[in-house]
Length: 230
Image (cartoon, rainbow, N blue to C red):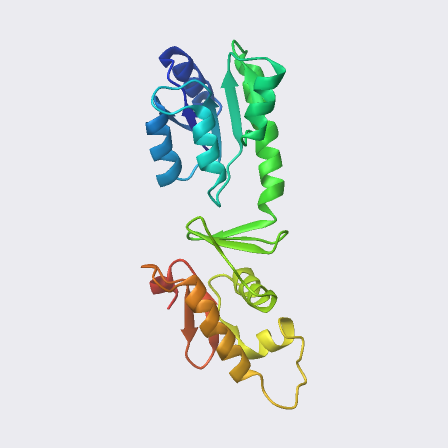
């Protein structure tokens, strides 16, 4: 479990980091809003502990940046501001929980564990392959934080590839599971090929890392490590 702590008070940041490490978590500290922004946009974290008042860029600004991205780790917002209006602003800006300073570390740890349990439940409905994210509940997909607009059939096709990540799926499997027509008198190969071409354009065109591959004589696969799986 990798946790980012964005806190400019060195004593507080050190205490949180050391406490989390003692509990077996990997903890990284950012001391300013800009440093936090760099970590958030360049690296992956399972949880974020975020101070409201930060130099250079506020915690609320970072929350709004984070919530515009497809990857949405839970955020515990730390602040000395404890009015109802402040709490509402923090939660409405995207915080998952709110802890008022000064606080006891055991309470912070308990709140983080609760957020982790919630995140594990949510993760079941959200899959990630490389920088591709697909939400099984909302039937949406994103690549590098940019939403990909898919038709219902394209979404079903992509979801099936995601289900078998790293494995080749055959046209027969797609006809049966996506098109629901296993006994069609004429093959669906041409229809499937048209859809895979459209899906490839939406998922891979213009991106250095390709995720969809045709496996000659077999079918198609989706993987973030095509060289290793080719």
